[in-house]
Amino acid sequence: MAAARGCPPAGSGDRGLAELLLEFSRAQYRAKDGGGAAAAKVERIERRCLELFGRDYRYSVISNAHGEVCAHYPRHIVLLERDNAAGRDPFESTVQVGKLQDLINRSKMARCRGRFVCPVILYKGKHICRSATLAGWGELYGRTGYNYIFSGGSDDAWADAEDISEEDSALRNADSQLFDKVRGHDIKLLRYLSVRYICDLMVENKKVKFGLNVTSSEKVDKAQRYADFTLLSIPYPGCEFFKEYKDRDYTAEGLIFNWKQDYVDAPLSIPASVTQSLSIDWSEYQSWDLVQQTQNYLKLLISIINSDDDSGLLVHCISGWDRTPLFISLLRLSLWADGLIHVSLEPSEILYLTVAYDWFLFGHMLADRLNKGEEIFFFCFNFLKHITSEEFSGVKSQRRKSLPPGFTLEEICMLKQRDRGSTTSLSSDFSLGMESSPGAAGSFTYEAVELMPAGAQAQATWRKSSASSPQAVLWSRAQQSEDRLPSAGMVEVKSSSSSSSTHSDNFLRIGSSPLEVPRSRLVSASDRESRLEEVRSAFLASYSRTIGLKAVPPSPSGAIGGLLEQFVRGVGLRGSSTL
Image 1 (cartoon, one colour):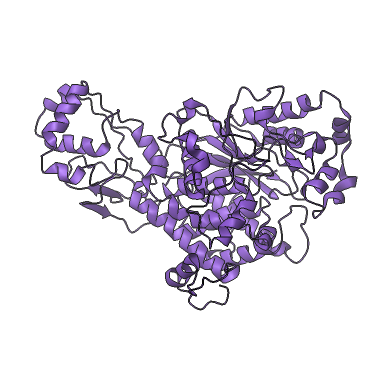
Image 2 (spheres, one colour; image 1 turned 90 degrees about the horizontal axis):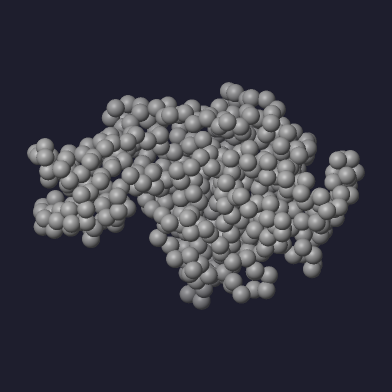
């Protein structure tokens, strides 16, 4: 365990991503497999991840060189300690790596396959974590036998039979105190990481394999050990469901999970206090298609991490290597697109980091999933086209907190423009304040305008008087959605430096409004869209050249599938042999 600094770039650019995808598609990463012909390639991938993390963060590394901490976690587990982005208030983690490692070693048996609670994203000083679900009796009393059953006999379940420590044996032989002990350590780890919210993606209360309960979950812990945490049951289809996605020509629209299957017994359950800021009818979740379900769950996660408290978040499914990386990766990319994390990374670099660290090094079995047609990995990056709007923006969530009900930022700009010649009309009805935000790349802040209206009558009077004004045309809700800044009259002034520049000309001006507060270029909805589209395009291009899609049977008309046609036209790979 050592703090790592200044690793040289390795495997950068399109070639690096192609090498990563090829290695990823051959076999599942296992930390204990340090030797062999692929070792040098994996080492380059690991070095590249550390270099990319080091661009924006001070970090330490927990050593897992031979898989002694967890067989399917990275050999270099990164603990992000401080956000060092220029022009931002530094958010520093209070976690000490030595104590964290001690808690990990004590708690790892509490979770399926030893995949303990691991922090992977640092956002505003909060740790966003991932893990597997809680282990059940079957695993605690015989991890090797459990692994064999759970994997259908295809894994190296029995290979570690001689590696069981005396402490593990003692735990297995413990009687009624077993769960108290191991789950107690798990809870201590969660509390040390300041995790309050636990989002469980399982569609089951307990995973059943061959009639045996092989895993459990916090929501059905009989002793209610996790009652002090905010538990969210947000059931999401497992990787098997994504074969239907592939069979439908990689089309998620209209694809609805069958919630009436016998094994599905975990209903959606979210505390009302968590959903107050979201206009979502959660009772309709079983009627959502895959697009809407993924969108709504992502909105929920973004809302949680932008809450006013300092609490962290844990996301997990069963093993933590399919659905979990899907949402961790979408969270990382969404926050990056807003300029809130990894602010110095280019689209190709954040793509490399999330593919390598969130998916490959945390053990996603891409080769197995591809062989079965369960293409959840491809779905993740193709799905970026569905989260480009401002409604998924963390910046929007922060800005809107300061706006009172009934007024939008656009209307405030209208008011300011109309009353700019008066020193009394504005101050008599409203108090207007400016608030800086750490969420912008560069030295400028976005506006968070606080108004305290004199009352509903004042709002109605103002809207009535302004409805027919020339300015109202630009800011009309009929022309623009409530949560999107207007594109008409928008002028973008860019500096020639990178996205992390602190030059004074790196901001947007909106129309002719006098409320010309400098804004980071990264918080624009249109810029968020372009950044995510760049990531998606880079992924599609590299994926098609290395792994490729399995074409579904052609339709009677002989038309090429929708996504394959998109590859041909949008990525410029007409006639590629990989398609």
